[in-house]
Image 1: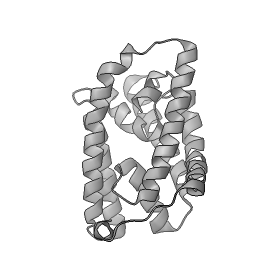
Image 2: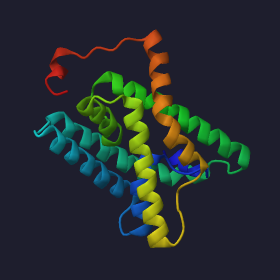
Image 3: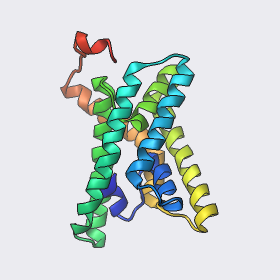
Image 4: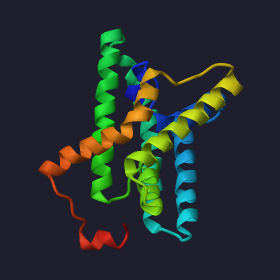
Length: 197
C-alpha cells in the first residue's frame, strides 16, 4: 500500500480514508488512523451479525500489526528511485500484489486485515457477489476521502488516477487472481482453527 502511494498514482481506495484523516488530523500517524478505521469496520461487522465474533478480534490484531508496519515501511520507501517509469512499475507491482494478497487471504479463512475482511463478510451477510461489494466499498472510500480532503484541506489529497482505477477494478482483479490461484492450489482449514474462524 505504501508502494502504491509512493508511485504517485494515489493510494489504494481502502487505505484512502485513514490517509485522509492522517492529512486532516496529523496528530496521529497513518498507521494509527489505519487501525482506528479497521477497528470501526470490525465493530460494524459485529453489529450487522448481531453477535460477538471472536475471529473478528483476531482480524483487528492483524490490522493493528498492519498499521504499525505501514509506519515502518514509510521509513525506507523514500530510498527507492523516483522517476516516471519506476512509478508506473511501483503502481503495477503494488496492484498485482494487492490482488493476489487479498485473493489468498480470502481463501485461507484465517484472520485478515479488517479492510479485506469487511467486503468478504459483507458479501456473506448480504449474499451479494464479492466483486460488487468490493467495488462498492472501494468507491465509498473514495467518496469519503474526496469529501474529507476537499472540504478540510481545500484540495484533493492522496487520490490519483491509480486510486480511481483500483477502486473500480480491484474487486474484479481479486476475482481473477482468485481464479488463477484456484487452478493450481486448494485451501482447507485445520479443524483446530475452524473453531475460531
